[in-house]
Image (cartoon, rainbow over all chains, first blue to last red; front, side, top):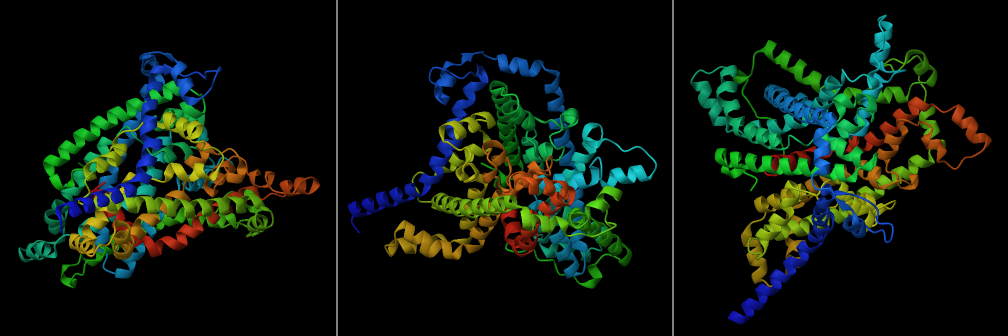
Length: 314
Length: 307
């Protein structure tokens, strides 16, 4: 094959591959990269430019406020609560999540009946496929002020029913249980996949050395899971300013009187935008969240690269 | 890794009997707890309104009733509209999304693609940083016209960088590079290679991403909450959300008006009706996912390690 012909063939190949990446690239430009330019809104007081209203005109003609939005955001005592909730729930759930799902996975691996093990797995996986709106109905079936199962039980016990959707105190528990219910099964299955991937000869060697079941778990299973756990932990820590919007928005049914324990950064960003039209504030909060998140992920990735270069994201 | 195989053990290596019983109780108990709320909701949906009024939601209602379902079948025009919307959005969205994902992932998979590094970074960066909700919302709504139309429910969820990476990893592990070289020598064009050779041998990977995408679309309510005001575009999940506060929502938008509507509103099996809506949404998923879970597990295992 001639040199020129080869070159032409290569150019054609590159061109073809470029047409393949085009649809996603166009989407990314329109829905991801252009909005990144919208970050300027964090430093502006957004106003509709009445003479010729269009998104670009509105942004261009809005007044600069410098760091005003950020100052306002961090001066508010609500923001401290929001940050406390966001970080607090994440830390608690990361810790609970690892302990519970690793334990469940180890136990599930010891279930002898193949049928039982498969059934448990399938049932556990169910919540993963359910939307948070549906979960909010499950929670409502228990806490509904007039007919909820728990409310009725409280009344039947002669006590007073808690006004669940207006009392902020029980929500850390409700949110935690909802989150565990929805995510534990799926995490367990991921860890189980890792456990079943462990080389069987390691167990046989341990058994020959006289290791009992507990010792095998301690000396073979857990060390084998360690790097996966550490990597997932670091990745979760990198996302500590992000929350599952659906959980915090729909399970408490958007009830304002319990924001003290249910408002997190993601719901704040949404409510500032949609309910109070504070576009600058919403963007500022997102920018803070994304910037800190970006830095944390970078740190997390560097840490992972040190532990296990193959698992690093980039 | 297409399926989780329960490791075979010889009996001597198993845990003791009491330990095994405890394990089964704990794991089985948790597994049961995962499905119990759904069973409870099914029971509520079949409870009579009178029973709910008297004893509240209960696993043992005083009286069973199919009034809620009868009502839905007779009257729930909004429900059927929303059912259609969810179905339509999930199907069309998944098809387009899948095609875009496979095309992009294939190019990233090709080691000899000149701009491979750039395009990998191009998609990957959006996982790490973004403009935030407000700018994205404003661009979608005001520049792209995503408002009260089907596109608003489909377009914003078309691309998921995570799925592209899963797809690329699938290709890397299942397609030998020699195959591409051989095809290229045979004079096969890029599209021909992709559609005739690669796609047929990557069916498990494609199935995984397709299923994850379908679930995403089926379960979405956030896009509707952002971009949809007109009930005729409501997907099921958003209808369910709206019905949380207004049980009469279904009938408000139905074709029946006047005296008949007033009568129906009075007899509305409000609470059981809402619960029957949940059943309508969850049943398709509950029936389907046990058959697909192995694909999804394999995708998520790849995703959890690399993604």
